[in-house]
Image (cartoon, rainbow, N blue to C red; front, side):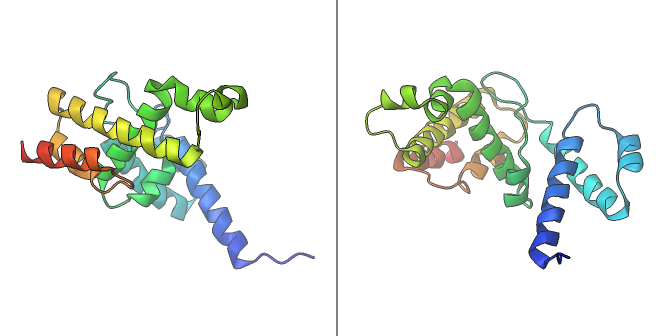
Length: 174
């Protein structure tokens, strides 16, 4: 007979929360679904997450106009900072939608070999900084709702290089 450890319970909760997030993030998931599918504590979590998704759904990619796919991982990391969460999701969206070579490089060994000195983490950091600068410029140009706060949210992301930090400083002062 196997015993359920505390780690197993925590992992089960994490998995269930991710499952809830994926259901709620679907546009066709409504209040009736929350009532029918989830139990008491899950309903509370679902309602909190649903408010977050509703807040996030106000924001679109300033380059293509599409709504980025909202990440549960980034929701957990930036739970108390909606603007950093939006900024991080925009960077992820840019990396996977607007730059095709990034996905090709980590999915295909043959393609990766064509890139001199390819390093996954280094490449991701390079592409993320490029994405941050592109998104910041696009936000300044289009000026959507709360654009200054979103730009400030980019400061909380990891690995901002000197160019990105310089751009952030100059755009925040505008």
